[in-house]
Amino acid sequence: MANAEYQREVLNQAVIDMLDMCRLQIEKAKEAFITHDEDLAEEVIHKETRVNAMDLRIARDCEKFLALYNPVAVDLRFIMAALKINYELERIADHAYNISKYVVDEDKKIEPKLLKAIQFDAMSETMDAMLNHITIAYQDKDVKSARKVFKKDKVIDKINRRSFVVLEEEIKKDASIIQQALILFSVVKKMERVGDLIKNIAEEIIFYSDAEILKHKKSK
Amino acid sequence: MEPQIMETMVMDSVIDHSLKKTPKIEVKGIKVWYDDFMAIKGIDLTIKPNTVTAFIGPSGCGKSTFLRLFNRMNDYVEGFRMEGKININGNNIYKKKINVEELRKEVGMVFQKPNPFPKSIYENVAYGLNIQGIKDKNFINHRVEKALKQADLWEEVKDNLKKSALTLSGGQQQRLCIARTLAVEPSIILMDEPTSALDPISTAKIEELIFGLKEKYTIVIVTHNMQQASRISDFTAFFYLGELIEFNKTKIIFTNPAEKQTENYITGRFG
Image (cartoon, rainbow over all chains, first blue to last red):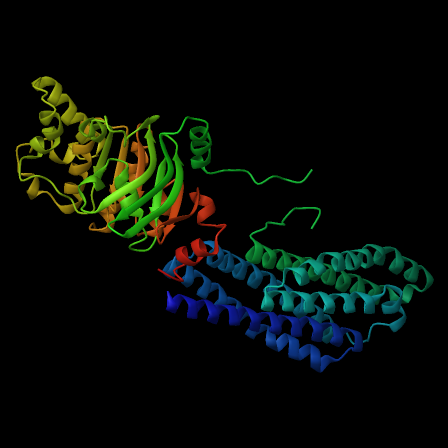
């Protein structure tokens, strides 16, 4: 089983690398969106290929580990969690890619007053904190850190819910911002989805560590 | 309302049903010594009827010694002595007045290596009935056919019952030994690594057989094959250095064992 132990560690490191990579992708995509930095957006788009390659590698390694080592108990939970975490991370990177595409496709920077009105900064900072929590949680098997994510996701959900009304008001005040408002609305929706995906990752970390299934539970 | 995790495996209803039944085997405070060496250090365990219980643990942990207590196979081992009580069907099998032959009719055993007698297939299966003094030919014929069918061997040997059992393949020989055990109609079958000398196809056949036999028999199996334990057993007992470390439903032992030692063993980190 020494070889299994080694393979498991290699896979664990690959998930950590994927986590770092996807975290950077979404952080850069947000930054590119706020500052309308086309170069940074292009970098995110370019790196999507690497994310996809890493996604395939982890999925293949999980399959190999299952087939060759017949894992049980904590090892089985690790593989199940690694597979799902990898899947969610890849989807986070997809959202980063799509946010960056808006930056490249649009000529104008989103009006700072619009970003301020919907509290985009707060949403972004909350997301950074959530990403930080799941990184620590995964690396240190720190369930406490993973659980912090659930409360933070509620902040993101709240901002998302009120964004429709806020943008509607802004459009009523100035109809020329319609296109910008629609893009911003779409990006906020993607951010909200990223929040959900981070939450799913936190659930998987808790399952891996404590064998506790949190999926579909209201109180976490 | 939050959704509950539904038990979807058929096994669960079987286990839950058997849990309501009275124990088939009850072990209370068993300690075993071989001369000065303490092989079993005080074990309590209850096995319910119509279940498959797997004993797992590293070599020398006492699982085979423990299994052999159930049909008093250790009685002949030099230096063997024990303390404690084992009840089978509510009767203490280590009582002075117990008839050991009768006990072994009730508690059959299948060994690691197939051990057919150098006799015909028919004679092998009929052996137990013959030594019981049964003379009725029709009755013996009926029991031989029934046992071979239960052991899933009938179709392969029905036209060659007079052929030597030694001409059978290893897997067939092991199923013949199971048929020989079944012919005397025990209610408990002990299996000591019954597939360790068999190829994967023969192993799969024996495992399938064990699953089917559970309906009528209580089966206790010692195995070194973790996947086998997880595939075929309802309950698993993990032994280490003569102690029972953990005993629980197999699905719990192999997904979230309570003891770190159990987890380390089943994940291959020691043993």
